[in-house]
Image (cartoon, rainbow, N blue to C red; front, side, top):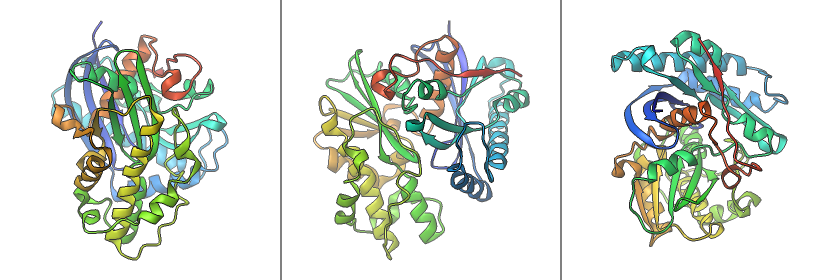
Amino acid sequence: MILTALGLMSGTSLDGVDVALIQTDGRQIKSLGPSGYRPYSAAERSLLRQALADAVQIERREERPGRVREAEQAVTLAHAEAIAAFLAQHRLMPEDVDIVGFHGQTVLHRPERRLTVQIGDAAALAKAVHMPVMHDFRAADVDFGGQGAPLVPVYHRALTQSLSRDGPIAVVNIGGVANITYIDGEDVLIACDTGPGNALLDDFVSRTTGQPFDQDGRLAEQGRPDEAWIAQALQLPFFALPPPKSLDRNDFAALKLDQAIPADGAATLTAFTVAAIARVVPLLPKPPASWIVCGGGARNHTMMRMLRARLAPASVESADALGWSADAIEAQAFGFLAVRGMKGLPLSYPTTTGVPFPMTGGVIARP
């Protein structure tokens, strides 16, 4: 049965809430509807950054130390506002939507401790928007020893079913953290986080220029990467680990880039993200023949240019070039995952998160 789902995503780049409509049976995509975006204000981003810092104290999933509880309320309100604006813009009623997929905001991800924390009050959101809300997608996977991330691979596989391509395809999502999905026919699905996406770069640009991110990669384009620094950073043990593997947004926060020239720092961190993505290629069964880039990194022209140089002779293109939405893919994915969760279908697999067997997930909060 085809269901209409509204997917939501607030990613590790802390830029805002993406909203996307999708019709699916949880296996194939019937149609992709419109998408929307509700940016976080500077004050909201500041609150979320403080919550990330306070979240390192969390020992149990229900704990909300420091400003984490305040941030949870802000995240819930922002999502409710995003949904209300989206429904009004597209003249939809709550009864037009079967399920909302609500990921929440990740503030701590420590799968080695069987701990992953996404803030956001799903019960309050369900009451506010008058729709059932599927949430808590990662917990079951982590409870059974999986990484709990990435969860988007099953959606990437569904998207690529319409492509006629030879050889393995890699879909790389560059948000705050970067992750890839490796697809080779129907039977091979491998996924992992590759390293920092935009998080280190965004933090550096914000700190040195006052801008929230490097628009279109213009700052990095003017700089020169510090190849020695990148080579040293790539010596961290994470990069040699085989898939599946996952990261917390702050896992690389200890890396210090003493770069007085903002353009050179931006170029270095952009090149580091690209090098980390390329570093996963030897860990895959075969080099991908084509790469499809989504997330904020797809809009960074300097990052895309560097990826094409690093990953040649494979093709590298933006998801937008295929008629997909580079910005809305993760929101669409959580709508897709919500339907899969309703039907008890797997969200993760041993080759995508390291869970011992295919694992479904999600919990429904009703209005």
